[in-house]
Amino acid sequence: MYTTVQFLHSWWAYLLLLIVFIATVNALMGFFGNREYKPKDFRLALFALIVTHIQFLIGLILFFVSPNALQAITNNGMGTVMKDSTLRLLAVEHPIIMILMVVLITIGYSKHKKKLVSKPKFKILAIFYTLALILMLSRIPWNQWF
Image 1 (cartoon, helix red, strand yellow):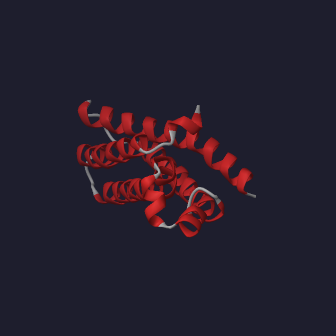
Image 2 (cartoon, rainbow, N blue to C red; image 1 turned 90 degrees about the vertical axis):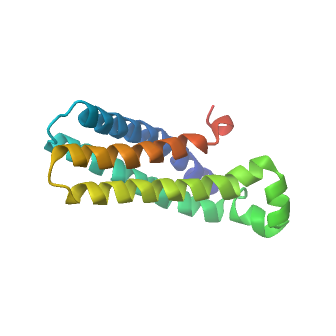
């Protein structure tokens, strides 16, 4: 089960990275280009939200079945995990930062729906999605991806 969930989590991450990047660029272009907010923009922001939440659920399952996450903390203790940079990334840093990323995407999406004018809608999306993208890029275990 672990290898299947890890495979799914890794490949879904490519989609997530692509969609959040596109949604972020779209929001920034809409904000700085003074475009009107259209249904395409809404669908793109919503798709980024959905893909993010699906990845979160897959990651949550992976956290409980992976030998590099909760099992590593349980078997070795938190002190040992925190001293090992690879285990710390996989068991602590990656999950916490990705939870924050999901929260930022969710807040940004929710707040932008309450705005009635295009510029503030794009501004909210641009701020929250850009922060989420930066957090995501900072804690991807790149050495396992390539």
